[in-house]
Each structure stands twice: as C-alpha cells, then as structure tokens.
Length: 455
View 1: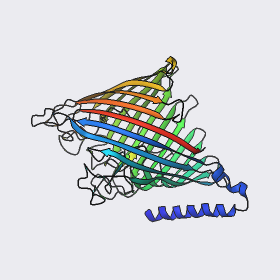
View 2 (view 1 turned 45 degrees about the horizontal axis):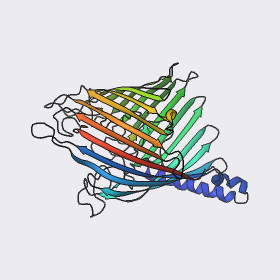
View 3 (view 1 turned 30 degrees about the horizontal axis):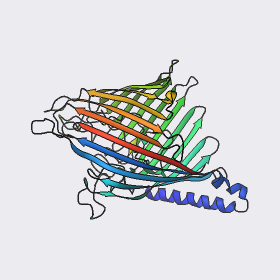
View 4 (view 1 turned 90 degrees about the horizontal axis):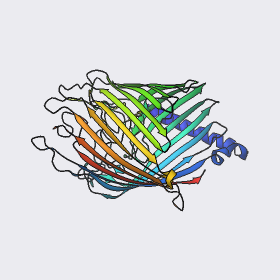
C-alpha cells in the first residue's frame, strides 16, 4: 500500500507538471491555478491550567496538584489552489508550535510531544528524560499536501496527505491543526445523495511531527484503513448519514447511522448510533446511542443531549469505554463522531447513561456585539467495576467568547472556558474504569487571530 500510495502521488504530481507545461503557451488555461487560489492562516495562543486530585489508600480524594500548566503558541499557513484545466489542483498547509512555558504534563496536545508514535512512545532524542514531564519539542510539521481532482460535474478526489471530506466513518484529531491521513479519497454527489470512499496507510495526530502506521488493540500491524459512507437529504430537509470502516489486517470495524432534521418550531434533532467491533478489546459488539437536540430563540441558544453506552470489556470486572475510531490507541486515528460536550470526561463507560445541557446568550442586542457567554453541565451514572463504587460523574462549565469588532485585530477571537469536574467513585485514575480520572478544575484561555494574504 505504501508503494502504491507513493506511486500514485508521483503520477499525480507528474500530471500537474504536464498540465502546467502544456498550458505554458496559453496563460488563460494555467492562470486559474493561481488566480482562483487562496492563501490564509492564523496565529493562536493557548493558555491552560488544569489541576487534578488523586486518591489515597482508602479511596478518598487527595488535594489537587498540577496536571497541565502551559502556554503554547501556534501558527499555520494554508494554500488552496484553483484547478488546472478544471481538473487538478493542490491544497497545502504547514503549521508551527512553540511552548512559551510548560510546567506539568508534556502530552498537552498543543505542542509536539517528542516521542515517535502513540503506540511505542519512545523519545525522539536524549533531551527527553521522562516522556510525561519534559518531552516537548517546538517545531514545524506538514498538515496537508494533497492533490485534488474534479472528475466531471459531480465527483471529486484527493491524493496525498489530507483530511477526509467525503462521507465515511473517518475523522481527525484536532489541536489548532487537524490530524492527517496519508492516502486518498473519492466522492460523488447525485440528486441529494453523496457517496464516499477513503483509503489510508498512515496517520498522525497534530501533536506528532511524523506520521505512523495503524496498529491493532494488541499492538500488531493493522495494515490500512478503508471506509465508505453515504449521505442522503430528502426534499423535506431530513438527512440520513451512514458509514462503515475497517482495517485490512486487523479485527476492528466501525459503523454509524445518523438522522438529522428540524421541526417546524426550529428544534434541530439528531438520533445517532455508533458501533465498534473489536474482539481484542470488547467481549461483544460495542455501541453508543445518542440523541442530540439544539435550538435558538432570539439571543439565546440551547443544547440538550443524551447518550447510552454499551462496551463490555474482555477483562472481567473492568468497565471498558467506547471509542469510535479504527484504532483503540488515542491519537492512532479518529472517527466521524459528532458528540462534544467539553466537560472533561467522555462519559462513555459500559452501561453509562449520560445527559448534557447547555445555554448561551449573544449580547449584541445590548451594545456588546461579538460577545457571548454561557453555561453547560453533564452528568453520567450506571457503570460498575468490581471492587469500586458504582460510577457517578458530573461537571459544569462556564464559558465566554468575544470577537474583536474593530482595529488591527478585527476578526480575532478571545475565548475563556472553565470546568469543574467531579468523580464520586473511590477508584484510582484509570483503574476499574478505563477512562476515568479524579476531580479536576480546568481553565483555558484562547486567543485566535486569523489572517488572509489572498482570497
């Protein structure tokens, strides 16, 4: 697959060169590559202070200590070309990160974690004495470098280092940059129906400089990932999204079904089913049911969501957690997963029932354009692990955002987000419950400044 990918990429690059050369005598043919292109980017600052409690021998919480404490700078530059002869173009993006300070855990995801990959976690150089505390690296990495193709009126394709954009079960991890697959995709749209196929042989989360292979739950070579998907929108606006994905040399598979619609009163609703099959991790097929709703009324916006998870562990007495991606290892890949509560926990343990509520207000009607603020909360219960209290976890968050309206920084945004998370079990972090940690307080400050060089 690696040889095939490189061969196809080389052939595609040759195609671009050939088209450019053949059009040299006619500027009108070649000019759309540059005249229809755009160059943009952003400069961002991310400050975070997260404290986490531990547990003593009796299962009681200890005082909180610093878990994350860093200030990170990020910049990216993106080029999106037009199409040569309405056929082939190029998308490219590079990004750089820098830690202004880092005084706690090294794996904070907003700079490069200076290890080889998320599976082996071997330091990249001898300056890293402990991968969990001092193993950061400033630097530059490639986020996108993909040839793009227009195949007639309704079909497209990509080849290279890219982010999936056609229907599939594949998604990417995010920092200020997206994760990157190496491979290709093809998609087509016909009368409200969109179809997609994605194939990739490597991936990298944005906090790694280099891409790496896919591995199974038991850390064996998983070959490539492939995924197909379809979306269909009816005339009444009701949309259905289905997808299926798998590994070529591994057991793991995933699939989803999502319905999305809007009621006459403006209520957006979406029942969803996510499924993961992995005989190396789960004792039976794992799934998560979700209901997502949202609506706006005047200056106010509301969300109400709920999930139920079934993720039976291979290990007796352990409460496993559900992950919607084609690798168990976090950072090894990601899935097309719509649920994001931003209340620290994933609320995704076996037999856990969880609820989420959020309300926010836009203050533009009282002479504060660009300013909004809100509150959210989540609560989960129902999971059990042998030897520990039954799971009960909950959190609340306060958040505010301001978009600068005038001056040199017009368009820049400032965001504040504070979360207090509570775990009422007596289980130590990651024990009994595989995706559970102790009480936390978490503060984030984000300044994002987008810019455009050419539109």
